[in-house]
Image 1 (cartoon, rainbow, N blue to C red):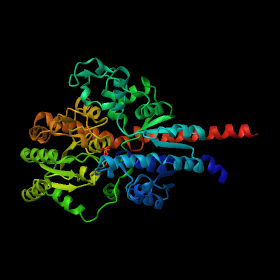
Image 2 (cartoon, protein in one colour; image 1 turned 135 degrees about the vertical axis):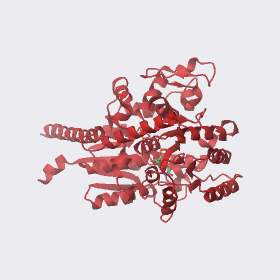
Image 3 (tube, rainbow, N blue to C red; image 1 turned 60 degrees about the vertical axis):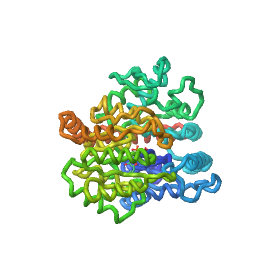
Length: 500
Ligand code: UDP
């Protein structure tokens, strides 16, 4: 009986990349695997585990087979203080470099663990291309975990393949992204720099990452069929990549309020009630939530423009500000601003980290300003919210086009250039007038705003249905687990034939 069970038991090991936008959805996905018949191990370092272990313990107490396997972050070796193990702790370029180096050095420990754990499948973040070889050595499938949209993967693939921007005279001219079902226009400036450059060097990290997707068993997407079916299809056919859409995982894995509040963070108790009371005093759909994700720390000059833009829009807002470690003037301004907003009851500021899932679900919240990080987009869609698109870096400009041109639930604030927050200078600031215009359009009562709101609510219904029994994402996850079990059984049969 025991050996029968071990044959049927599917052991899946998850390896998240330690940045919230990648780690949060992967942990939720791992928990969903455990709830639907797989035995799950998550490999991570101590400080990273502490941000989600509460959820794992709660799943274990409910009887789900899931555990965290800790590895040691080489803090001393890379010159970092203990506990600085996540990209979100990188408040300067120097720190970011050391954290990346530390993550890179984990490879040896992880490979040893794979050998020790002998999983039946590994699900590893897109940022670990080398895990394709680890899986090959073990003779097991590797699933590539992609942390953004099908749309952005398709758009980026065709831009890299056909390089339509190479023939333009200047970086602010428009080109059409090739091979997409609808016409999508962008400028070279909105592309990540390594794609924009005229003579890209070959063999870089990103190329290895895209290659590793092709060489994997398939790709897991935190997305859902009803949201981007054309691009899900394009990804499978033209690009020839097997994939499963199993999202939105945050809505699926965190159905109760306590889980929503603590997701992705250790949680600071006490503060929660204050923002909730503030929101509860507001009318439905009257508050704009403003957040730039888990990494961005804007320069004070940009914070100042946002503060003025929000204030002159006249709309209510709740704004998450991540503290910048840089020594800058302007802190006083923000403190005075916070005080003034408190008195006028127009705005509420949350410093550093907000319980985003909980906030988005409050009836008073009627829209969001987002940097177009994929998780924030999905979470807002699940809450039925239209968005102001303020992309910053990486693939976020593709996501902006998805919101504005495809889904038609987004107002662009008008960002022109793909830049990391630490490179934002005076010339690339988004000005208060542009911010105010976008806020008034999104939060006002024009026909355009009503239509966006209606579309967003419809997508929210689809997002909730897809993770219920019988829904697309629900079926995809169960089908994938079954497929991985069959693969395991075939492997074991092959092995026993060889042994005999
Ligand atoms: N997040 C949060 N509170 C914050 C900032 C971020 O809960 O104050 C969560 C957010 O809900 C999302 C993730 O962190 O799940 C950020 O991922 P996203 O893809 O939106 O952007 P990134 O941080 O990777 O740029």
